[in-house]
Length: 133
Image 1: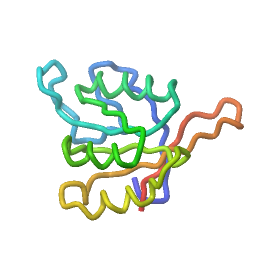
Image 2: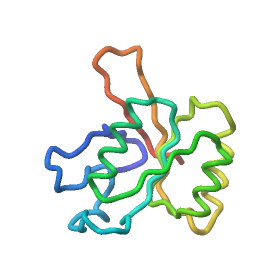
Image 3: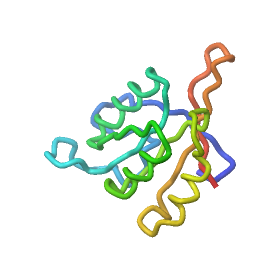
Image 4: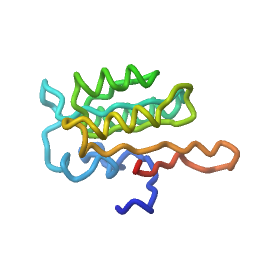
């Protein structure tokens, strides 16, 4: 996927396979391990989206952490070393500054950050995301 594309966030139809949006690093991994394989951070106040993403992440054997503020995001980044960050820029706070700080940290410089764009005014639309630049 290049920077100009977006992707739908959907769980895999096969529960034994990780969702495509988690990336190929999860392919072929055991999902019944007592330790999480990967950590994903989600920042949104959309309950339905959170439930859907949490279900997909857990089915892939990963762990989901929620960040309600930019400060919480940075604390989680420092303590959990995520493989993916999903973030809703519609939340209160300076999320753009938080993204910049994540990209300056050596531990998360290469971590993909996807910006969620909720289009609730479009009937039948699904949540979409795009990579942060």
